[in-house]
Image (cartoon, rainbow, N blue to C red; front, top):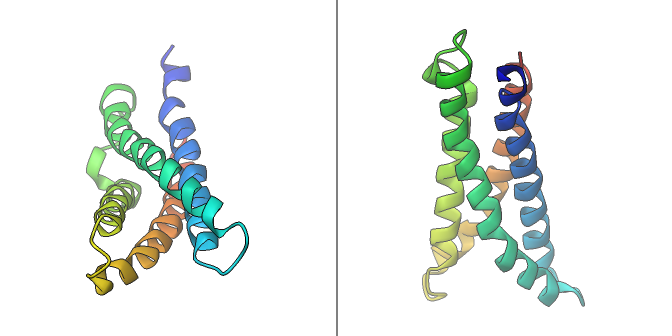
Length: 134
């Protein structure tokens, strides 16, 4: 049974990574002067909380799966753990900057950069995590 359960976190993380990249893609597309910008903005607002939830679940599920299922690993000894934790923090910061009033232009301007860092971090964490598969 443990042979199957150890793949739960990687499967969730792959879905989370795809979600983060897609949300970032539609977010960037919504900032361009295109006919579908409004639809992209709506999709970004609708799906970003779901991508965030997947990232947080993966960030919690990773250490839990290491403690319960992987005796060969230590939770905080890998770069993968810290990058995953950083992505969860970046996604939370992205949410906070999106909720700031538009009067705070600096926070609003930081939002796409935080999102880009989240996307790149998610891809990097995925690559690091694939090396850790049993």
